[in-house]
Structure formats: structure tokens, C-alpha cells
Amino acid sequence: MHPLWKIDSVPPAGIPFEPGTRHDVVIVGAGLTGLSTAVMLTRAGRDVAVLDAGPVAQLASGGNTGKLSLLQGQRLAEIRTHHPASLVRAYVDANRDGRDWLLAFAEHAGVPYEKRTDHTYAQGPAGLDSVRAQHAAAREAGLATRLRMPGDLPSTPFPLTGAVALEDQVTIDPMRVASALAEELLASGGTLHTGIRVASAHALPETRVETAEGPLFAEHIVIATGSPILDRGLYFMKIRGFRSYCVSFRVTGEVPDATYISVDGPTRSIRPVSASDGPAGEGELIVGGNGHPVGRSASERAGIEEIVAWTRRHFPDAEETHRWSAQDYESHNLIPFVGALPRGLGRIRLATGYAKWGLSNAPAAALRLTSEILGAHRSERPDWMTTLGTRLTVPADLARGAAEGARVAKAAATGWASAEARPVPVPRPAEGRGTVANRGGLPVGVSTVDGITRAVDAVCPHLGGVLDWNDADCTWDCPLHASRFAPDGTRIEGPAVQDLRMLPRKVGG
Image (cartoon, rainbow, N blue to C red; front, side, top):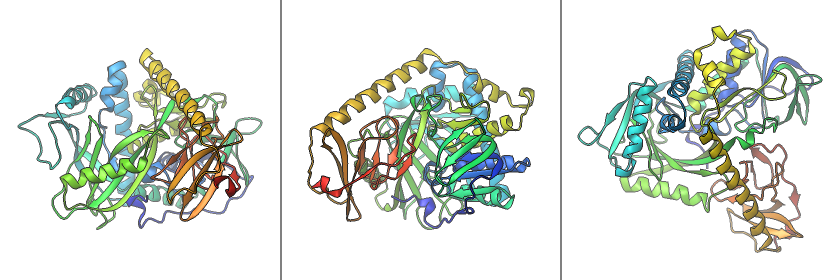
């Protein structure tokens, strides 16, 4: 499970951490949001420090498909269903400004990219209404989309019964972009600390972030960690985490020169790769899909194998080169959360909820965060910032939140009941497998990875969800709010900030 983009990528590792230092802005998260915000602020003369528990673009930023599109599948139609056209237009305008900034940066930094026609398409007749709805919402928002029906469809080796197309969208290597952003940050005098986990942030008595190695102080803090690591504002209840999968292939025959994403299931995302928008010679085609809520899949590995089987049906000479997964978050009202964190005194800000379209939403969020931190007057900001920042919650948003809350409650009850039904000791799991058992009324996770069998406390330290074994990534995933942990209990991502407790191996039998 290693993204295509990371095979020959060595992003900057940053500089040694010095606790107690002061900066104008401290940014938590070295993905596209954090690094874009950092570059914008350093260009404005601010002293910026970026911290991340892992390397640059370790998670979603380095694991996406590298598709930058304003069409975004059926996202515009989904927003329009329960929200006014003005909100959809503002969302599109924000993504357009984010895209334009990112491409201008790429050209400045010498990061190549390709312009391609993007398609939202139907695999069968049942998806045609969704295609038409996306076309209508996109046109209403000012995009020059074209509806393509039988007689005007591109020739593809996979089923396609109708599509809406938007020209001049972009494919790009996301790791090249993230690495270039980090390099500019350091070259401009900014600070980058990798391998430093932030546990908390506070506005009083001094604005600061806390790490195991000591604090850093700042006038402003930005939390750009996918799911916010701070519970204030209860954003973990206002978003839901999804994992989706990608496989890259070498294909000796022809591959489509455009990009595609289906509206009907199972979701298929198709993206060609060339030397200018990906690692040369490592893969000519990426196929993704089969997304699901984190921790709520019977088998993640089966989802990947199904993508491989689908691809080989339609591209018989396809040779798999890499497979990987990524995690992103969707807000219940379908618009990203960007701005001041409650009870942060206007000094702590966040960005989350891109719903897998981070290549344009991340720099759009960075534009808004930068504008707020620099104190730009509302009249100096684009209209979309005001519209998105003052949107109203509608009944459908509340209904989505309530439905997700019910699913979380069910996952919590199911996890505890399942653990209680299987007492320790349990047989040693096979390689790449994990199981949850019960020891004295408490769930224990036992797994075997790289020949090592480990036992950990299988209760998420965030809000007590019983963890589920991810058999593709070999991680412990929380079905409540999408925190994830390595087999040895090390926290990977999510609202949890603590590791799992290691237990004696004997509990596994």
C-alpha cells in the first residue's frame, strides 16, 4: 500500500525542533492546506512554522488521484439539491480561485501538469438523471459544461451511457506540488518540523501549541489536519471520514486521454498518467473507487481486488504497479468548514471537509485563512468568502447529521457486542490479519504484520469506539469518528491524539 506519487519522492524533512520559540503563525499539518497557507503567509512577510507528526503530505495530500477539477463528480448537484444556487456558485468560485492559485504556483515552481477534459459519467441508464442534474447545477454555477449522450460519447473500453464534460481541467502529481511548497517555505525563511505531534492548542493564557517536546507560541494557529485534533466546536460530529482506494497500472494499449468519475455504483474514478503529471514509466492508468465510511467495511482488501478485477476486464493487458488508499472528510452540509474555531478568541482557525476534492479546496481554504489572518477587510475579500462563511444550515443538513449520528451509535454498540462474544486467548492471526477479542470485559486487538504479533487496547482513546481491523492498510480504524492507528498502537490520524496502549502478547494466545 504505497502511493504511486511517493515512489521516488523525497520531500524536505524540515529542521530540528526547538521548543519555546515564537512565530507569527503556527500551522499544524504539512499537507496541501497547511503548506499552501504557509507559503501565502510567508510571501506576505509573516514568520510561519509548520508542524506535522509525519513527513510532508503523508496522508490525504500524498494519496489522492491527482485530479484537479471544478466538475467534481456529482458534488455540485448534491449541494444544489437542498441549497440555493448562490451557494453552489460561491463553492465553484472558491475552487476556481484555489485552482488558479495552485496552477500559478506550479508554474512558478516548475511543477508540470496536463490539461484534460473531465467527465462525470453514468455506467448505466440508472445514472443518467444524476448526470443531467450535475450538468444543470454546473451550468447554473457558471461552468461551461457539455452534456454528452448516445451519439456524442467518447469511445471508452468501459461502460458509458451518458456524461457531462468540462474541458481544461487538470491532472498533476500531488507530491511534486507538496514538496515544492515545502521547499519554498524553507527557502523563504519559514520553519518546517516533521515528526513532531501536536497534542493540543490553546488561546489562553498565551496562544500556543503543545507537543511532547515542548510548546511553540504564536499570534495565530491553523489546524490543518484533515479531521481537527481539537474537540471544541465538535467538528468530529459535523463531518464523516471516508476511505477510498486507488490502483495504478501499466497498460501497453491505449488509455483514455480524459478523466472520468461515475455517478452510479460502484464508483469508478479513471485518470491517465503521463510523464508530465506523474512518475514516468510507473503507470499509465489510475483506477479508484469503492469508498466507504472509515471502520465500516467487511474487507478493505476485497474492495481493492474488485477494482483490479474491473480494470483487467476492460483493460486486459493492465499490469498492476501500485495500490493505495486515502482518507478524507465530508461535512454534513457538504461545504468545507474554514475559519475561526469556537472559543479560540479569533486566534485559532481550522479547515476540513473537502470530500475528496482537496487539490482545489485546500488552496481555496488557504486563501480564506490567509485573508483572515492578515486582517483583510470584508470589502477586500472575494464574494465567495462571505457567502460560504455565512451559509445557513438547512433541514437536510441536520438530517444528514442525525443519520450519521445514528450510524455512529450503531457502530459503537455493535463493536462492543462483537468484542464481548470472543474471549481471549485467540489463535494467532494470519499474516496481515487482525481480530478483536474480550479480556476482562475490555476489547483487545490482536494482529500479525510482517511476522510480528501484537496486542493493543482496541478502544479508541477519543470517544471509546471499538476499533476495526483494516485488512488492506493493516491498521486499526475507529468506526465512530475515523481515527486510525498502526498495529503497534501508534496514532496515524483522526480526532484522537493519543496512541493505543500496548498489551502483553499472551492475550493473543
